[in-house]
Image (cartoon, helix red, strand yellow):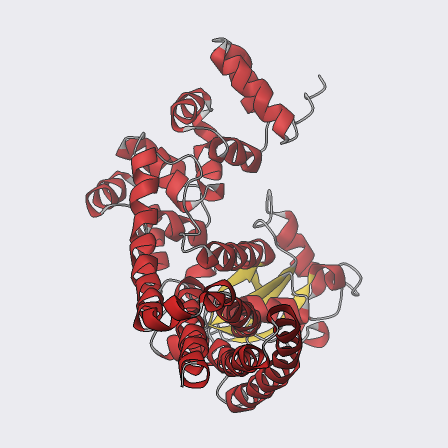
Length: 453
């Protein structure tokens, strides 16, 4: 009998399932869910409001729970887990790869975590405890321990007969690893190379000894950079003694890259990259109010600068019209540099060895932009307002603010990194405070000195 075609994930498909749910066609929805891949079901859950999400989860085959939990974003997964009892959750986790198992277990509340471990069999419990022993966001936490290793003295024929005895290979296997009697990594044997070798050749004769292994403590960002640089599909993970502990596959690296992109994008908006689109109203409002409060404080700092020059503004109403131009230009210039530096830090292009060169370069860019746009605004404002003095004031303020913006845009993320503060989350707010304050202070200060004295 021909299997039904798997349903694609599209907005139209989401609408079809939503309409079926609203119409009470639960059997039809269950059948549709059975035809979908786990990743598509996860996408459907993330795209559904909380009430529909609960109904959908009840209609999903429990045998698919584990694979779907792997694919869910952190906040949505936490909400789904709250719908499950510890016994069912333990069953869902038992077939997960070790890296995905640690990823799910690490975020469980302590009480639920203990209950789930108690429900696991001894083998799964040991596997979970080992996976959790490695620090989060390192190669150890990313690796899975399901791989095939070989000894160098066996022949290719023996290896092929050994592989045929397996009902299936570990998921994502593209390479076999060669180790000595102490499990130290000696080299690797890609499957594509294995099948074309002479059956009588030994593994030692045909293996690749130039394999580059990933240290256990390397950060996940550095791992992703290596995969991108070398176009790897998988890579071995070793400890300080070069003992093979596991491997990292490209699917895990894709998740890292995606999370980094989401983190940067959401961070610029002062939001958590795992925030649930369909979270309850009060929850979303509470989370966003934290950064809105901080931003209000920084806005009041800039407003206090304007207040210092209230007398100047009351005598020259023209200044009130022009005063927003300088901070705005500084903010744009600074954010261009800020985004460039944060991206460079994320992909590993910026470090202690080239940070000073970068600061010098961005300072010079700021000076050049300051001179060019100071001249441009001086001409425009002088002709517009018929006053070369006002044109001089705004030109000087523009030069100062663009110069400061270039330096600040490069300096802020570097300083925040040293202080273990996320520059993607807090960098733009700090930069805006600086460019607004410097822009208003320089413009209104110069106006007071030049126009009123």
